[in-house]
Image (tube, rainbow, N blue to C red; front, side, top):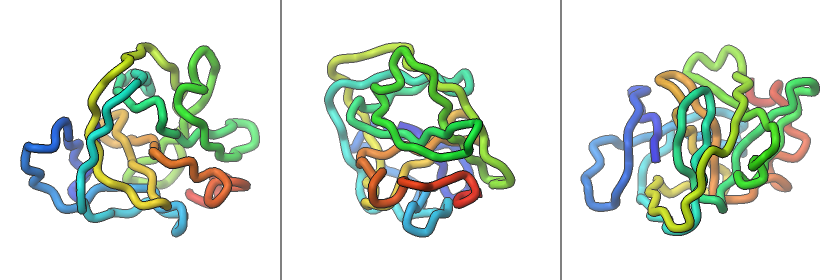
Length: 161
């Protein structure tokens, strides 16, 4: 997987054995309702079904069990869906950036499926979402946990931006 480090650089993490030269990465902390840096304490390898998402013209693999923040462009309400729910439907991912001046509305689509893919990500706490790069300045928020009822329910863009 990809992440942004403390210097806003895109970092590739694709195995558990390669030493990591960074200490922090960007997350959305749903408890704080803010984008912040989090310390990398441990990496996790996930092996299983994965889908390839295309967002902002960029393609990347995500486990099918993960979730992504989406936004309704008309009401500015934020929702959380399990990524395979985006198959064959039109959803808009909620994007952010280091500027944090305004949210980005990023159309997303699933373009491929792999039944058994190994992906590596930093370990996240229950209230965190990984800020996954979709270009050198923009990210989408993804997570392995269903945080809808505790953190996302009734959340709007005004709560984050």
